[in-house]
Amino acid sequence: MRILIVEDEVKTLNYLKKGLTEHGYVVDMAEDGIEGLYLAENNDYELIILDIMLPKIDGWTVLQKLRQTKQTPVLFLSARDTLDDRVKGLELGADDYLIKPFAFSELLARMRSILRRGHVQQTEVMEIANLKIDLLKHKVYRNDKHIDLTPKEFSLLSLLARREGEVLSRTLIAEQVWDMNFDSDTNIIDVAIRRLRQKVDSGCDDKLIHTIRGVGYVLEKRSE
Ligand code: CA
Image 1 (cartoon, protein in one colour):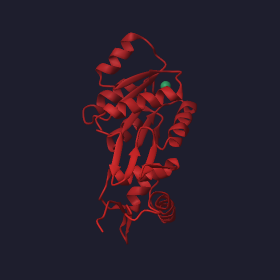
Image 2 (cartoon, rainbow, N blue to C red):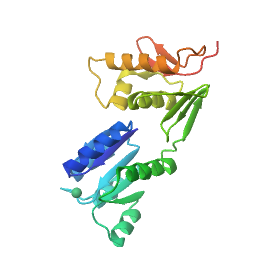
Image 3 (cartoon, helix red, strand yellow):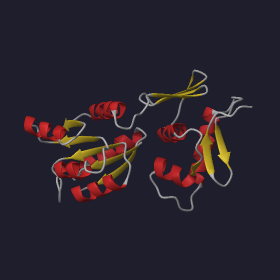
Image 4 (spheres, helix red, strand yellow):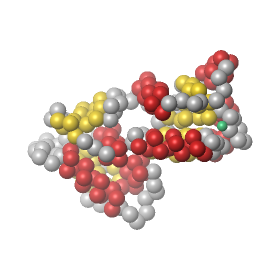
């Protein structure tokens, strides 16, 4: 889950980045409207958290310009709290509006609700063979047995599951889950896959996570 935060207040920005990362999101950040719009137009985010009062161009303008090309869900974040502002935000095509200061749990709840009804068509529970992934509760079960995963392992598994049957390269996995460009360090991904396999596949006859030598990894149910 890749999220963009556009916010010029560094304290808020870091607080959000830390919290969302802990919840398994991959977070990009921009500190002004121009940079935010550029990132939003050139990447595919599941959601954009957009401040209104921003340097260079404000959040309204960012949203207005973005809507000419993209329908990425937007959650406005603002210290302004007048009815006019809210209406303006929603008319411009924002998906929700949150007033600062806010509780992190409320932000998470609003985000989840946007993603649930969202343009992304995200399913809440994915089932592949006897593997069950609850995307909202961040829980994973195999054969109805709960599996304890770290946030990164959860992101990795949900990425593989969302693209079931598709071989994913290490580069793609690195970008989507670790938010890094792939260079020489393939090791992180291989180690993470190995750990994920131990948790998800060990003790099961029907393995789901497979290595495609020289290419990458795929999650699929294979008939014996
Ligand atoms: Ca601001």
